[in-house]
Each structure stands twice: as C-alpha cells, then as structure tokens.
Length: 254
Ligand SMILES: Nc1ncnc2c1ncn2[C@@H]1O[C@H](COP(=O)(O)OP(=O)(O)O)[C@@H](O)[C@H]1O
Ligand SMILES: [Mg+2]
Image (tube, rainbow, N blue to C red; front, side, top):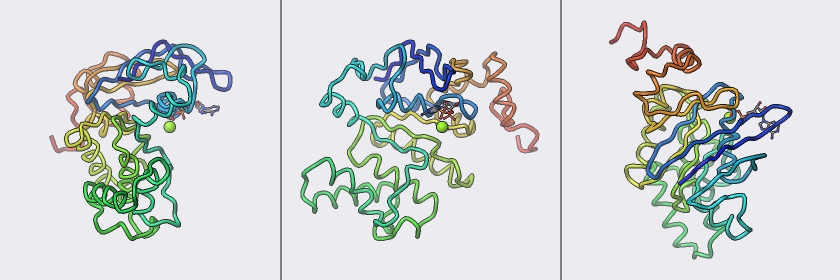
C-alpha cells in the first residue's frame, strides 16, 4: 500500500532520511517513533508529496507518487486523511462547518447530504452535541476528535496522524488511542501514527518502526520491538520505563 524504497532526504546539510526502506500494508496501524528531530514528520510528509526525496521512491498502491501528474496526485492524495500536529480547526467556524470543509471544497454534494455525512462522523466520534460549538468552547480531546472527524470525512483508506496525543492528559490520550484502533476495526482504515509516546505505540501498533540518525533501527511488531537488541531502542524503552516484558518498571503494580 505504502512503500519507501531507499529514500534519502537532505535538509540543511544533514541526511534526515538516509536510504530508508519500509512498507505499510492494508489494515495496519503502523507506528513511527524516535527522538525529536528524527525525521518522523518528514517521513509522513513524503507520503502525500508535501516533500520530495533527493533519492529513492515512495510508492503508493504501485505508483511512484513523485511521477504522478496533477490528476494522478489528486487521486493519490484522496486516499489519505491527515491529522497533523497543530493542524488546528478554524476558530471562527463551528465544529460542524469545520468537519464539512473538505466536502464543500472537493465535492459538489448538496448541503443536506453534506450535513448528513458530517453528523454521521460526529456521532462516530461521540461529538453529537458539539456540532454547533466553536473550537475554543470544547476541550483539547474534543478538538482532536473533531480534527479526526474532518480527516475522515472523505472516507480515506489511510489516515496519517502526527503526534495525535501530544498535549493531552493521559486519560484523554488513551481515548484517542482507542479511537485510532476503532478506525481500523469499524472502518477498515489503515493508520500511520507518529508519536514519541511508546506506551501509545505499544498499545495500538501492529508494527513499530524507530528512526534514529536517518536510519531505521527497528521495525517489528510490539512484542519484537520491546525485545530489540538495538541499544538505541533499548535506551528509548528505558527512558519511558518499559521493561522487556512490556511492563512499567518500579511502579509497584505488576
Ligand atoms: N522544511 C524544512 N527545512 C529544513 N529542515 C527541516 C525542515 N523540516 C524538517 N527539518 C529538519 O529535519 C529534521 C527532522 O524533522 P522532523 O521530521 O520534523 O522531526 P520529528 O521526528 O521530530 O518529527 C529536523 O532536524 C528538522 O529541523
Ligand atoms: Mg514531528
């Protein structure tokens, strides 16, 4: 579905991605972790050609996304919904109008059909009562959910999430994790999630890939990831108090 082949991207004078190869299959919840500045967001941006590689290919459903013309690119991008870091809701519009925006911009559907689809997504994300409210009048967790409703309003096959739980309290973060899993279970959506929260990664990931200094240091299912022999992975796990059994260390509640 998504394949990176030997992708290199130089930014400043550093290879932020240094010949990386990986694949995301349909139905996966593929999680990308790494320290700040590791190239996680840059990797996501390549998937929808917001950035282009200096070498290598990004292949979406068999097509090199950087070889597509205007129409082909539009079709390729339509497969994706994105919930980017700080991709804020427009403050002067109600939640309902925010979620409706992509449908109003990219389709010619009549407004009653648009509103029907919007309300369906709001219900799916337990935002039934928030439609008339403005973003500043709802909690951070609800804002993320509204952003997710907007990201999936065009019924994408793949959703890209950049740090979906950053800035949220732990309880709200776990709710967002549940929702990401829900997107796959209920809608069959493939997810690519960038996070530095390993607890989240281990809870939701079908595979976890760690980037470090331009390279992939691990790419494995959660059980394999926590047993990684790579010292960078091990110190990343330890920094978040995760032992090889995947349990919290030293908290007294085994
Ligand atoms: N548009 C850009 N121009 C120059 N450097 C950039 C650009 N975008 C990202 N970088 C650099 O690339 C590196 C990786 O960035 P990023 O992918 O945003 O990291 P993260 O893993 O924290 O998401 C950082 O050193 C960042 O400063
Ligand atoms: Mg980032």
